[in-house]
Length: 249
Image (cartoon, rainbow, N blue to C red; front, side, top):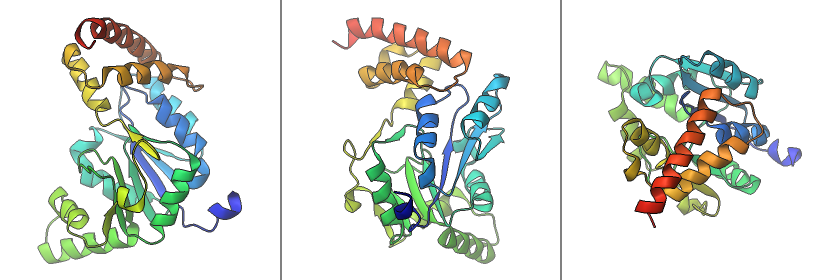
């Protein structure tokens, strides 16, 4: 396998982990698939859970944790530029923590596709969520430099959208035969569910069964997890399970 991997230009894997929700399954996958990436950059924001940053750093000892002051999506272009500057790979691969890769063969498909395509996105790509975005650094650098030179202003989210959606080289995963439910599962509603719980909207949870399973299996992952997350996931799982009996069945 290593000889096959050595034949590819491995991308830099970039994700954002909201410190309130730990994302143990995502952290587990980062370790499981580490050899498929040149390096890994994990953005997280400052948290009163002082030990979460330490937990995160310990779970990816070979790679970098970037602590930011605001949620990633609030300064998405700024964070993309940071990742672009400090990454070692020739390609940037942004993956939402709710995007779960099924098997090694999916990553081989992604690496093969990255050799031929400059921009690859998931089929329902949302610029604010960055479900799956693979982009060549050379293309991104050239576009940023050209935009800022010609427009005389900072590269912004509108320019990023134009680069992605109006570029003739952009291709989506399904066109490459990388298929949801077969090669990956993207639980798009995960962060929305967390926000709904914060707002007390327990009856409006999307995909409650999948959400309950996510909370349960997250705690089974053999990685150190924050005490706050363990307590939170247990209480929310119990509450949603109780509500589901009355409202979803």
